[in-house]
Length: 327
Image 1 (cartoon, one colour):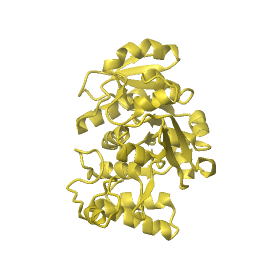
Image 2 (cartoon, rainbow, N blue to C red):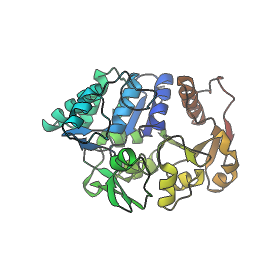
Image 3 (cartoon, one colour):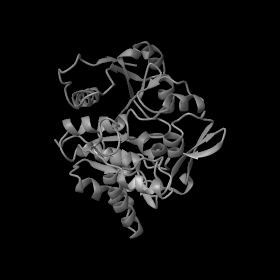
Image 4 (cartoon, one colour):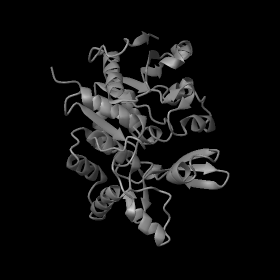
């Protein structure tokens, strides 16, 4: 029997951590990660892809663990020089990180497919996991506030998520098309995981692409989502406030509603076990375990538990067994 195939849909925070955990317990070639490209933006003439880079750096073991993004042991002399010349410096880009963006932008100008560029960068950094783009087309999340529309990076980085979110939209979505690689990764998977990333601005743009949602609805794979919320709050980021702005409950129930019809099971944190009954009433299998990943051991343990939930691998005894509540 061939090794099972696992496909993870992920943003750059909790999704990247789970990607590391899955890569640690799966053999090379088993794991594909479809990352979010709707946070991408041009800075200083360079195309920056924050979530894809966070996935790549995390899987390469090069991530700055304190920040959760960017490269470890980074310096910022280039950004300081740009600021001295009068350029905006609110988007932190380290000196090593600039090399990634220079390389990506040059290849894009040569007409190389963005998907191929992501693969080339990943391989150059020693990543064996298959990192896939959901689309090679330009699509960008925008956030409406009382001051008007902001790019996601302006809202998230420059404004530090302070303005109230009134509305979300994805520019370019109407012309964007999914990559064949992403569609195949969902179609051919034995397990599809929606990672603990923001369901609206990290996972949402992937699902919004024509064909992706249909592929997830039709796949024969087990479909599991991991909630990014713990007690109605995110570990990092504005998912709870965005859920409210979009008309969802800022809770695991809201996350479940975002993924209605697309998942078979939802994994929630042990602190939210009170949500089980309501989730069960929505027809979802529910698993309760520690979803907060503070260490590499936590990442691998959660990965093993997700595989066990799909019947693909026994749960490692590093933690108490997964508590499953069938629908």
